[in-house]
Length: 268
Image 1 (cartoon, rainbow, N blue to C red):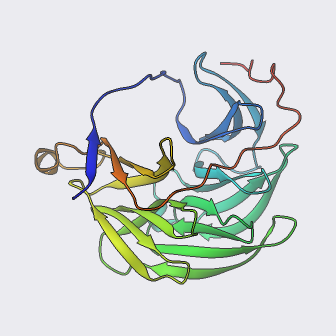
Image 2 (image 1 turned 30 degrees about the vertical axis):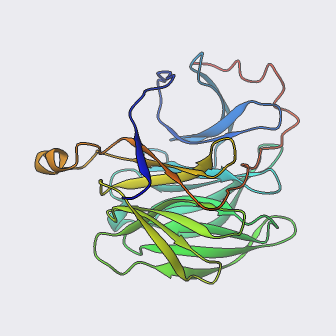
């Protein structure tokens, strides 16, 4: 755990009435993201949200999960079975364009997670966390649509599941490992460069930040741990930071002309 710092100081927080499953910035400094039942413009300070789009699916059994913005300025997010994703591969992958229109890009997922995009926009990395334990490398066309999907990494070790991910400036992939006690870094050809060990098992997401974009911020979870494991992992659920020897990339911004300054006055 050399170089890993636990961040115990709590920053600003805002209570919200619905679960936010993913979030991103827009080109006009607004927030967008997914709730369980669709893609929204978000105002977390005032706890208001305006639905932009929602694919025609059964939200009593399916919900949205992780998401991110691609290099075209369009938002991607995947779905999963709400109650039993282990036994139901009913998740799918959607893209929301500048007009807010959704398009189905891929299907047959247990638990979608971690979309991130190469700088040239040619590839997206995405995971099916549960059961398959795979990171996929997806080829994207010039129009941004998904062309093909291939397995980039398969975690066949029991109880190690790829979760959230990000890319650095050299296009190395950083993968948070649920059940894997840390974060792995891989080259573009899939070679493991390093494992950053954490004192907690359930690692959920990683992203670069800081003034020079060289600090990796890592989120973790305490949910689902037994009482015994919570005693053994007192820092579960904390935010960690790790000073890297590289730099990340600025996050892509969602481009949407219709998200003007008044758009975030949605119903609560």
